[in-house]
Image (tube, rainbow, N blue to C red; front, side):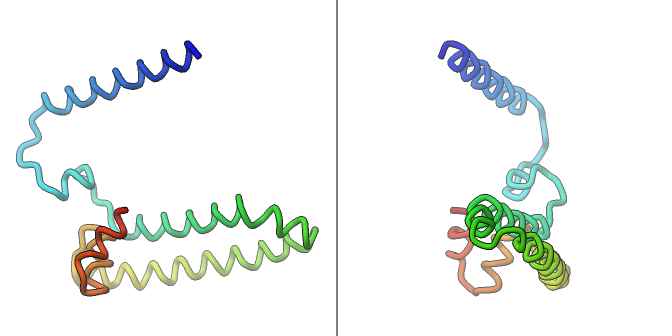
Amino acid sequence: MIWFALFLTMYGAALVYALRLSRATEYGEVSDRSYRFADANISPMMGILTFSATLFSTFTLMGLPDFFRNHGVGTWIFLGVTDMAMVFLALWFGMHVRRRVRMHEFDGVGELLSSSYGASWVRYVYWV
């Protein structure tokens, strides 16, 4: 338990040090976009890849063990076919999203969803 408390203390001290260091440097004008994306060129494609990874991880950790228990070795054939279909759909969906982003220059997935649904509250649901 002492090692855990020591680790948490060191981690907290490192966070405080990083905060003070970031306050001390001069970045110029700080905008909402530079805060969210750390002045990087992160496109909504990163959000789409995150969605795909989340779906894949959820099935692998929660659905696959029971599916394998019920169907045995045939599960590997199912996995091969469905993984290829998932990759195809993720790339196809990503191409459509990329085309839309190029037309409107969105800052992130939240703004893309807000524009698609025509309501600003969708952005907050996405962030939550």
